[in-house]
Structures are given as C-alpha cells and as structure tokens.
Length: 326
Image (cartoon, rainbow, N blue to C red; front, side, top):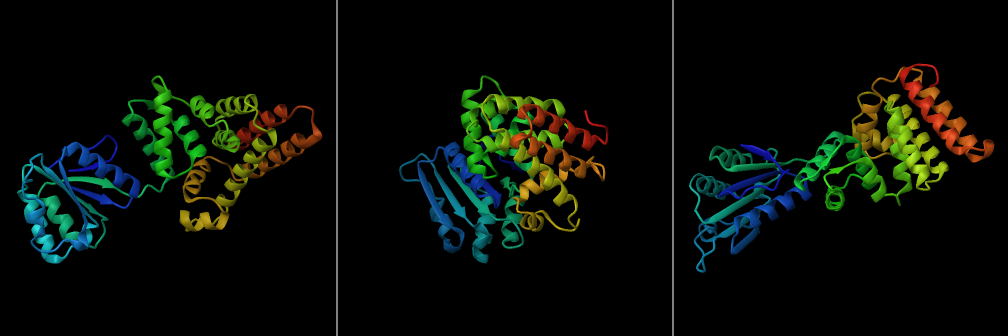
C-alpha cells in the first residue's frame, strides 16, 4: 500500500521509497532508520550491490540489536540482484530493515513491481512542483508538529520563504514552536516582518483573488509595521501585471516555459493561473489603471499614501468582480 510522507513513517521489514524529491527522501530514510532502532547501518548505492552481497548485509548482527540496510538509486541494481531483492522482500529477516530508494519511472521497473507484489511498505516522494502541492506540504508540516494552519497562513509562508522544501520545513518547525495551537497569517507576518516585499505581495494576492477584507487587513498590518507604501504599491503592480502577462500567453505553454517567458518561478505561474479564474476580459486593464494612479499618488501626488493604497485595493477587487469601484 502506498503512503505519502506526512507523519513520520513506521519501521517495516522492507520499505521502498519512490520518487525524486530529495528533501522528502532524505527525511523519510532518516525517520525509517531511527524507527528501526538498528544498531548497525549499511548504506550503499544500488549499482555497487553485487550478486550474493545481500545475504551478508542482511545476516544477523554479531552484536545483536538488528541492522538497517539502505540501497540508494535502487533502479540501478543489476538484473540478477533484482531477483535477489524481490525474493528477499517476500521473506525478510526479522531483525533487519531493508530500505530501498527508487526514482520511479521505467528504469528498474521490474524491481519496483516485484517488491510491491511482495507487499513491502511503499512510501511515495514525488516532486513537489505545483502551488497547491506546496500548500499541502506546508499544512502537512504543521500537522506533523501537532499544530494547525489555515490557508491564509500557508500562502503567506510560501510567499515569505519561497518554494524550497528544506527552508519551508524549517520555517514551519520554527512557527510551530512559537504557536500555542493554530498558526495564522498574523503570526507568519510577525515572524517575517523583516521581509517587507513578502508582506506587500500578500496584499496583492488577496486583492487579485477578490478577498477585499483580507487584503485591507493585510494592508493595514503592513503599514502598521512600517512597510514602505512604495513597496506595497510595487507588489500590487507586479501582481496585476503578472495576471495580464499570464492571461495573454498561449494556453499550450506549460508552467516552466511560461515562467521563463515572464520571469517568474513555475510555482508562481500555477498560482497566477488560479487567480485568473473569474476575471472578466476588461478587468485586468481596469486594475492596471487603478495601480498606475495609486503609484503616482504614493510617490507624491497625495497627502495620504494609505488612502491611495486602500482605494487601489478596492478598485482591483471591483475590477475582478466586474462592478463599479467599491
């Protein structure tokens, strides 16, 4: 039965970890070794495992306490070794934890099929590439730490930290340590208040998604902690321009190709495509006009930058809804 890495995995006589997400694979293997309680550890590459060596690696330890055998890049093992591993998976030794790491795909599919047929534990660690998958990862990290986080907090953290899973996991761990029970957007903003541009982008995301109350709340928070109105206006402009550029791009472009064309990371393209849903044909043009006016006002044509920004946010939300300015 396949499982994804959310909670720490349980030890099993034979486990195959399938996928290419390095951070998840590394952590899963560490967790499996720790859960096994093994006194001895053998860690080797699949291509280096020769015929007959599996027997010696899985033989009982002279000192007791069991052992763990980790075979990395198991898709590269030789054909005769595949047969040995498959036979072993069907009848493993009681005090040994065999952990194989397989990239998935066509190479080495015989090993993967044979080990699965032997009812080994399967843990999947596929590449995390889409925006929604990264949000799921963040929520899973907080659950792993015994805390809850709402969607707004997960989005704010992704904007503040970026898409690297190691950095996101570390950030989740730190926030969970400081949170009483629930991690919310305000806690994320407080923790990362030094990243002013991230706070501005949170305002922009809420605005282009049509969430007026959240956008205004985040705007007032950002201004209250001293984020420059110019930075917030710049984030609004970038958010609206990206809507226009992604919306006008050919539909057959994948995220990676479109990201290279517009100069944004692929995960951001995925999010912008979601944000575009519900926008009327002339909405982006109206929003761009609102941002241009706010930019001029923030840079000197008005005595209240806060009012200019709030009005811009209201006009962006109205443009998305296809209504008169709010």
